[in-house]
Length: 274
Image 1: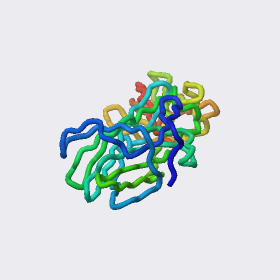
Image 2: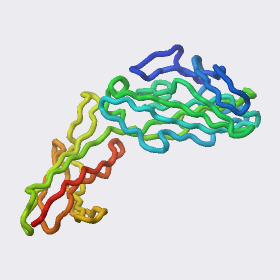
Image 3: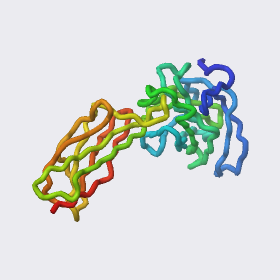
């Protein structure tokens, strides 16, 4: 049976701790929520008895996007079943190739479980990730693994090293400027901008090079943007192109995103065509 390293090492604000079948700290009754904390260790990749994890939802199903300074609290829910009912549950988020020695491990401080019925419970947790303390490498962006645990009231348990995966991304920014404005109909407009993303190693935003970004236009009085052309960012993340002025409206850049960086749209820049 494999277990995590003995003791509790802390890397930034992420607690590197092994888990155990926890004891309830407070209880409201059979159908009420219970709050539990964890302090010891539990097995990994184990299935004992009929306990089953049926669903794990991380961050409401959305990618986790982190900038350079603000911590983010990530909500997690786990639903599990057991013929005798569910005692507790737990979720870990981690990056790396080896469950025994992850690059970084993020865990909740507590889990609160509420019975759905006699055999099923849904447990909620919050995991806080602070880019200033916890993310020291840009290589940590991308696919993280989700380890899930559940314990039945009869001592059964299930624990999966990788129940599913979830994306953690470097926040992106995109600017736009269309000039000159106003402009005479038929004349050229130069549209510039910059695509940048969080650099966790320097706690700054740095230009995202060689990325395809769409130039889009929305006619005044309408609500939908249409793509005019696609331009690639240069080595510093900058964008520049020219278009012919024909109608009043808004110009913006639109980036579709990558596995490590979320999609982002610039706020439209209005140009008055005369």
